[in-house]
Image (tube, rainbow, N blue to C red; front, side, top):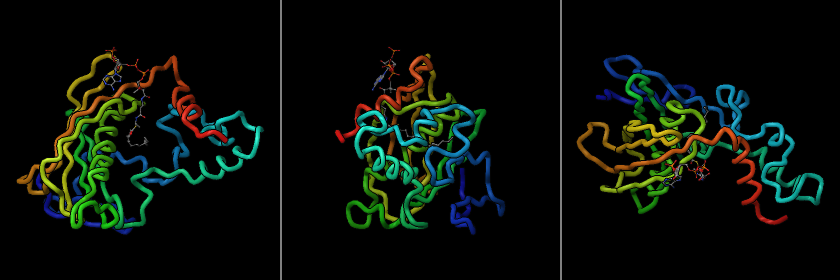
Length: 224
Ligand SMILES: CCCCCCCCCCCCCC(=O)SCCNC(=O)CCNC(=O)[C@H](O)C(C)(C)COP(=O)(O)OP(=O)(O)OC[C@H]1O[C@@H](n2cnc3c(N)ncnc32)[C@H](O)[C@@H]1OP(=O)(O)O
């Protein structure tokens, strides 16, 4: 995709302009809200036990009612934010994604802010990995439903200058049962520089284990 230019609109989010028009295949950014989980849930499918989440029971090492951890966790969980949307405007992750349903691919236009610095003048590799995970993850979610990253392999080929705009081109390669294989590359806007390549495996959450996430959170919480 050839981008003419990129702009920040009044809502502070990036938009791509091509041929003088905002270029939108389908903006698949349902997570513009910084609240997590989103109020309306994930297209009607619950990822976590929302009631338990609201009651602050997720993340507690003990059943609610035992000790003070319940209150602390309630407060902390109410501050939950989507990582990539938790920076002040312009300082962290600024991006928009365009989803092509027929081709099962996503183009993400990403401009990281100065707070994503690693080596002076360049993006931190973890920030790049985060945006890659968010993009291939969204590709897997819109293609297959509720999934989690099982594996992510990244080849960092060139450092990415801080605050530059890059394209993340993601493609669903294969679905094998519950497994979705998604690959992507990160390129300069003129597509002349290949910065990064990645492959990933996403696994659809087993419907028989619908509270897997809750169990995982409970197990991984530090002792109260
Ligand atoms: C719409 C609003 C959206 C808002 C949200 C926006 C978010 C933006 C997007 C952000 C996105 C961010 C997303 C994030 O950051 S997600 C956060 C990072 N990921 C995790 O924390 C996941 C932790 N892992 C797990 O929970 C489990 O292991 C999962 C759920 C992944 C699988 O456990 P489960 O018990 O369900 O499955 P299974 O063990 O029966 O395995 C099933 C099959 O998979 C194969 N397998 C499994 N693991 C691996 C592996 N590592 N390499 C190769 N293969 C692997 C396995 O061999 C088997 O294959 P087969 O024998 O059937 O052939």
